[in-house]
Image (cartoon, rainbow, N blue to C red; front, side):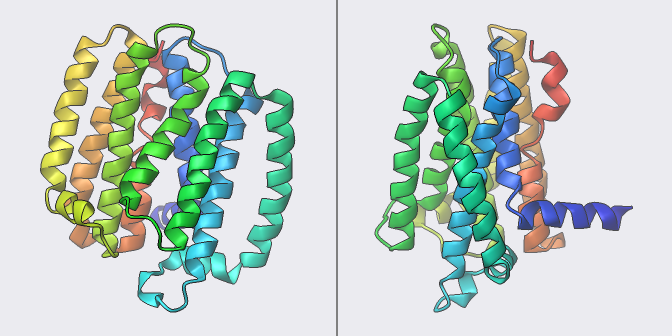
Length: 270
């Protein structure tokens, strides 16, 4: 049974389904916490766009044959199955474009368009070697912002209540990226190296502040969001403490799985 779960988790990661799952889950969590409505089709637009972006990033990473030491199993997997990924991405890209133009709310389309332009510019800057911004920080901020857009764009008021929750989620995403880079031994930006050396204190402070935010939250829904951040922080702390016992692949999978805590708190998000 354990072997089957490991296999499923590996496929979840290798098929680039990990980030889209986290994005969909937290996006729906934000919407639910703020007492908003999101149709199933609208909820699928974000994970679909996230999957296309991550597939593009991993395929481009896999082209770095001159830097094989930076490539991981996910890059080799996308390189081996590049044609299949490109066919799937082409079909889903057309489907995404049609769905966005047909079903996405104008204000959501506007906010997502801004983020999409920044994400594409940063993606090309990274792969052209022209970016000086830490990749971990940029990815965390863009990912958290895109995840929050469905709730943010639907709020006429109350954005000031949602904003701290988005910041906590962005911090979690940054910790996740820093931990992965640390455990995989990648080429790290100076700020990422510093954060990697102090990862446990950073995670501990994040957990304490998110717990305090949960106790002070203006609604049960937002309290659930902060509690999810608290539990995720605790799981990332445990992962770093036990990182020597797991392979880099399983650490990467577990780091993303640590962000699935909203699954346990959905019933309390209203």
